[in-house]
Amino acid sequence: MRAVEYAWQIARRVLLPEGAGWDRRPPRPYECRHSFCTHTIERWVAEGRDVNAMMPILSAYVGHSKVADTYWYLTATDALLDAASDMFWASVGGGRRG
Image (tube, rainbow, N blue to C red; front, side):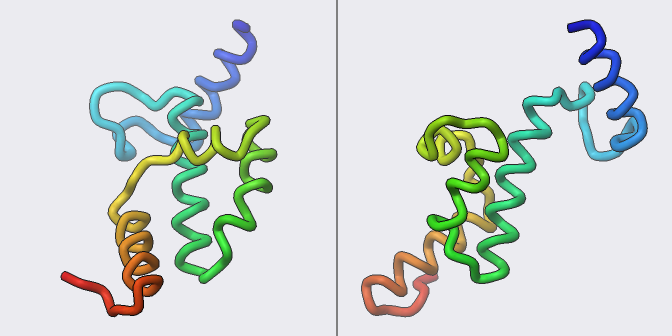
């Protein structure tokens, strides 16, 4: 486990220099993985991909045995909430309310 922690410290210094967007403490691997999932979904939405069809790929990539675990893992960002709102209003036959 010490080797993994050491490797993470080196990778973090290279990829996320001090002060590069983190407030109080540097991010942990879990948080980077979590952000990766959320940003991947945001990118898929922006590209117009079928997110539900792509979720098994993301789920397998991050090592979840169930797609539901990956959905639970996501953060409701402004971009994802806007996309969900747009999809909802499109499904009920109206334009976006706002």
